[in-house]
Image (cartoon, rainbow over all chains, first blue to last red; front, side):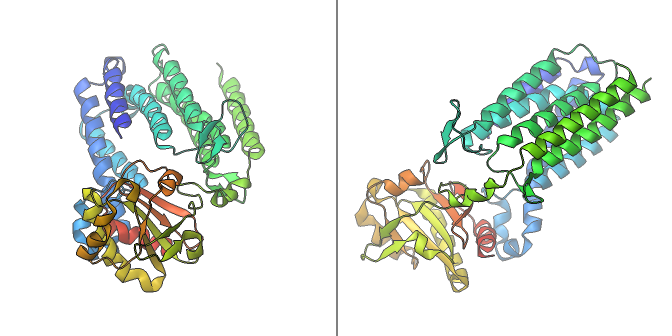
Length: 226
Length: 179
């Protein structure tokens, strides 16, 4: 959690340096991020409670208990997106410009997520006898958390040092494409993937589908401003 | 880059991605449950410990039951705080095959405090004495309390580090491992 807070702070600081490039004010950037983070936390808690109502009806004080495990990440993301969308609409922020402005924040956050996985031992790799395997959970494993972090650092470098994009949205879509492609590659070495259709890794299929959508959006953005 | 060139690039990337998905298809992840580690998805590390009265409990012999392994100590405030909730849930779910093994970290606690503690809180589930540190090492103990929710197949479904756990959290986790 501490790593994620640090990543958020660094990411926002870097994103602020280039807000004018995308036509977004620093206040709007900070506000949309903070409101979204608050919505993420509250939304995650509420979503978990709603999905487990019988338990909380019997123990209503549990809704405000300090357990961080009372949290649904997908519900949190959904609520965060809704709040970000509503804020953007009210402030008349352009979607693609806003996403471009937030891209450095997303990139740094991804690095923080990789480091937090390494610290917690989650998102662990398959067993391996490669020389760079790490001892984790009673086996020598692919250091997929390190792969993930290194890929995120590389992607951050690529988006940070990219010259100002000619079209709104291209910077964000480039980041999204690189992240999806790296996830599709690295997932092959994970030891905790969810399997579908007997042997396919769900996360890889989702990353591949995301690439399809991203490529379609690339063409839409390039055509839109042509 | 021209549009046609971009589309060719997209297709190449997607074909390579699909090929990589197929190449990296894996059926061995199902074996994770057979490997033992103190992490969700793995078989719970086995142990045999005794209660203060000498009764012996072996975790692997409880396969078929949903088990909560709770690592605790009498000096630990959140451990003390969550015991009433654990006892309440134990009473509520024990007839459905829910078992609690409260493993006291006796090697870092005062054994003379354990029985009075259990009596004070009216605990009816087994209190096991971990006197050597081996179980703490097997579970890579980092913080007290640590709780491991183990399903009927002996696979850890959830790990909760720290506490106190609320009744609501306990209830959701217990109902999950009872399925």
